[in-house]
Image 1 (cartoon, each protein chain N blue to C red):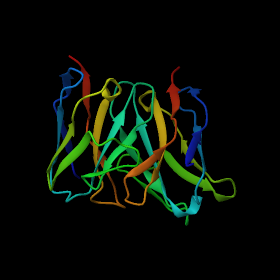
Image 2 (image 1 turned 120 degrees about the vertical axis):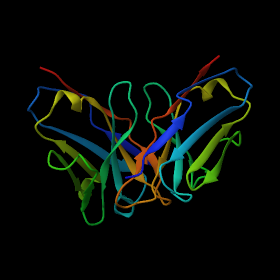
Image 3 (image 1 turned 30 degrees about the vertical axis):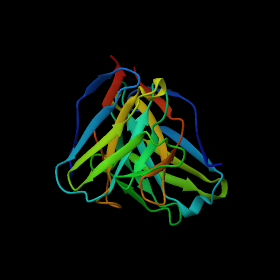
Image 4 (image 1 turned 90 degrees about the horizontal axis):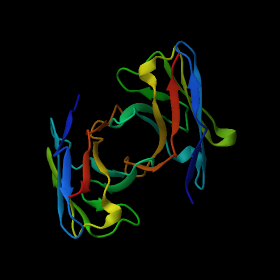
Length: 118
Length: 109
């Protein structure tokens, strides 16, 4: 069965960097792109962008260029989200979500809580 | 940029009743719309895609209608496990982008 397993919670200080991983299994990794979505505490869902798992090309949503970086390692079916120069407002649960055959995100990781606090 | 709005923000319903949730787009998204359910502490789950098609394993009590700018998610005969937050999402500009609505919380009356 399709599974997306993300790395564990992170506690970082402002200005630091963090790298979140999302390991896929149960399907052909390169056949489906991956979204990244975040959810601040008590807030809605915010789309960060997506990465083409065949070419490695990323697309970033408005407001998420510069400090946010998507990457992948096809040898281990894993995509990564790296955030640099962390701010307190980056505190959120970060999700990876597969781009399904109909584009709608059909499988989601369990989420990774990133807390940015001094 | 497409802006999604949802109403109401909170809907109080009793088990067994029908819940009707609305989603509106600032411009036409055709049928490029999905609905998600999210329970506390869990990741969102895909309910509906293509504006009206239920995802695998989603019960028939979930139905959706609409196209263009106005969409409705109907949950008939509400069960205890249906109390959650529901988000709509458009992907009309894919691959350039997609946008989530702010969500509707369905809670116990």
